[in-house]
Length: 570
Picture 1 (cartoon, rainbow, N blue to C red):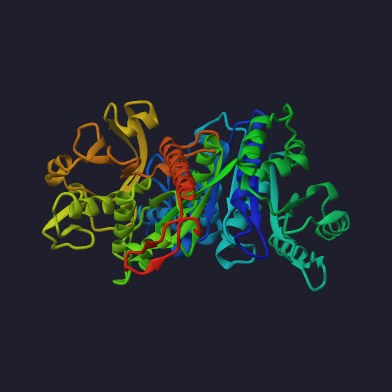
Picture 2: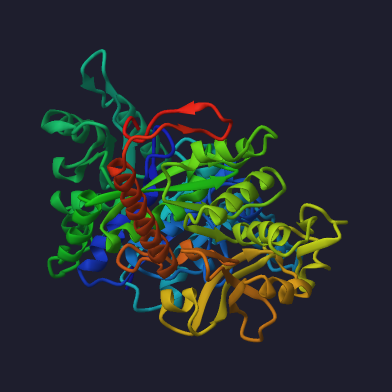
């Protein structure tokens, strides 16, 4: 029979419940247990698919097309498990289900209420993973938001009821709280944690374990105080000090025997986990031999969580290349000014060894992205485009190499004459916005001998998608005449999935989202190849700098004819 672990948060949001849940899942899986994680979000959206990245961060897409919270990305990356739509639940989904049942008359004339109907539906979703897979040993359920929020109360009430209905050894609760450090006092403060636990106990849930998030170790005295006032054994209060890398967190929890005490709580006998491979991976992450810089030119750069999976994919790709990938964030709107010229672009990208254009929606910042792509193409800087990045690359190449002066996308210019990107045929009759894009995992056939093929090492792949617009096939022949290779297509050849320029050191774009399938032990092939190309570009830059330094000093003029410093002075 499955065991159930609930993870809640207190004091403030954004403490890292997703990382904590994923880390515990990693440790329990290393003990040989079959673990599955799920996220319950209290907001009323059915899913985050229609939410702005500024509101919610990245929308993580699963193989079955479910649009989910970004924490599911952490679950998949840490436990190396593919999840599905049943691993994410929102209040909106709960109420949608209940109201649909009510309209069908399934409640036999009863008044539909939060208790029992809403809480019963939540309890059903808690047990659903184990019902679908009887081999599951532990279900970890993370509750979004913060204890004390009105919208989370039905979920916490459902947990309270669920724990009463289950044997004591079959459920456990982990509460994640903030233990702030006050510099002026020179000490940490435990009172916020005490109040948060009091709030949770007032709802009827006594946490079995506390994880204290802090910038400094809590120390033995504070640990004893927290344990005393929160009604817990001292050994069940864990230090969640900030780590240099999120991939250190499982090792930090393992050092405190969190997983061992969890198994004891669940009355489970397991072998000690072998974390040696994870330790080697973290060692490489924390001790890179070099650093390469990748510019990410996006429209949501003020909120890095909008590109969370891309950030992690670069961490993963740095491991086999033995480098740290430093991300240089460039707002694409800053590249749209009429004053932006070659010199200014050179100033922005001069220290970068690669340029990436991520996905997105809407016309804001598009011309800035196109300028960045043109600079990368003309200056032989490794370039990688994802989803919208491919579409912008098609526009840039269309304008400059294919002589389509007004090349555009139907998304930004519905009446344009040279729409090299257009709305997919099956999308034209769709009215609803939520859950209606081309979503989930789709097959792709690679062209033998292409860069994409050499990166993957196979001809047939599957990747996750999230888009409505595609390459317009009416223009494909003209692009191929200009030297573009469409190296990945749908099996029937109708949809372009990958395009590349063979004459460029690395110029490759994809319509799908490769970042969604990257794992720390299995970096995505395209990210790995892109970072390798950036390493090569950095080496070329160094060789060129050494060559210039070795040449005799000569006075040069810059582009405006003004005297410039000599090479030796440089």
